[in-house]
Image (cartoon, rainbow, N blue to C red; front, top):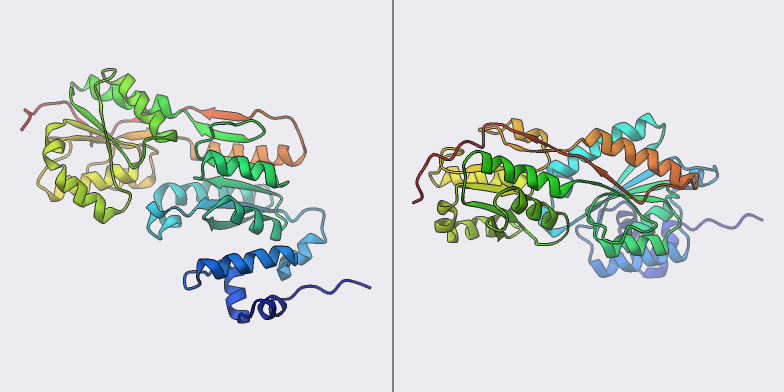
Length: 339
């Protein structure tokens, strides 16, 4: 006799919750649900091996044809994770490649590696792409999950048995540093919300490309309101530099907005450069000088390598893609005197 399938109402009854609450947790609508309740529901779902309706059908097949894309729901996004320029651009490229491969894409925000495992297993995913997590999360996934995955954007210190598709962050920073030096700047600053991982690599490259050891680093708050307050407090410092390298286009564009609002011109007073070459770079005024990475190539490799992992083929553990400098109107020759 076929084993009776676990239903939402069974889970709700066992936990003393409404079926609506359990359903909302399953579908990721947890904004008004406590973290404790979400954890209880997800734990029991896994213990009871609950399978959503459509997943039950897919499980009957040899392959679900579902590829999951998990994005780190980090506090720095302030509740707008999927609206982030880099994230949305990455999802766009990944969607194109996944559709081309005849598979389905499922996108999920996650706070930790455990959430990824629970959700990916629930939907019997064929593979997953992980964006924006850290080394310990990737190692945890490798040790606790059978589903193949690739690290798409994140710092992976120990890539053994983990496929990390990264870019040459050091060289990107180096190219910006050289660009500022060639323009005659002699007082440059790098801004980032942290001093580790890919941002650290970009800063070190920037230092090397500028005048080794002379470029300064400024750690900035993640939240916009606090960041602008910090810029206001650091305004005397900002007025002394002639060029600023932001480790992301978002922070570069945000800095441009702050400077304009406080009476400074880009690039006449301060040159600004970013990193990633998101579409917004060409929409702002002046258009942003930045480091371009090939998002289409990165996505294509991610999906190709997932297929090879699924077929248990031997593949390299790290792929480093080149980047290139795109010069636009936000950088110019040094031509002003310090305040």
